Length: 329
Image 1 (cartoon, rainbow, N blue to C red):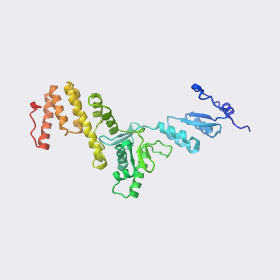
Image 2: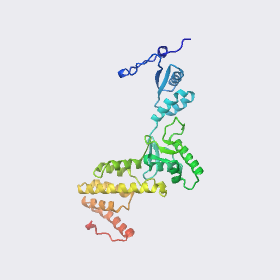
Image 3: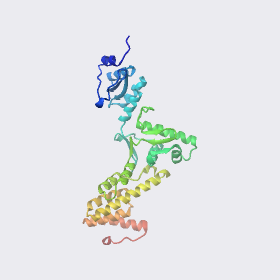
Image 4: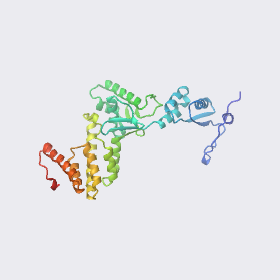
């Protein structure tokens, strides 16, 4: 039997050689043909297996947008398909969103990932969201989340949390094939920021990239700030500084933007910002005072009177001071 070479392979398979611009694809006859298979169900699967077994070809890419899980099952019968299948499953992986402002939830591809999630697994995800570059060492994670355990017990708990989280992202998780939402090399655990985005992280990015003069950006920040960071873990030490720092930054930005809006006569924007922030933090007296002024300036006496009653009650009950008259505000 004659050995298979590049020419006989091309002739037998009916493949076409595509010449890339600049002559990049002009190859020697001894080169293996690099193959991309589009559609890997049915006959496409047989074709991929055939090309993978043929010494004259090299499968460099697979494409099947319908079902990344099927690609993972495909590699069981062919080691040669492992790398291209892994690349494609990662590319097709749905983006995850950690809704960590207000009530905590995790979304995958725009939908809730699970109805209930183990508390420590979600704590690990939120803890990593507070970290620079979304990463922490093994010891930092153990100290923050399992301080009561010895290193062995804590390490086991960390591994369990990682195991469970990976299967929330991908119920059929397989090492080396599935998308790397959560990475752990034995020393450092991290979130893949290309696949996982947190609301608190987006909020910080907008705060750092814009100023109070950018009123549209400020409204966007206030709109996404549904509540304080990870209130499910309100009393966890690792969350306190991050939560309070972010809250103070958002309050400060909203207050500055309200002052700018009041000075420019844009009462509607000032009212929108004020009511949104008070829904999150009713005790923000500086925001409430600015909102009172916006109601008065826009000739809304009923709204101003109702807001003043709450403002006066807060000053008397919580601070023990008498509020100024409404006309003086």
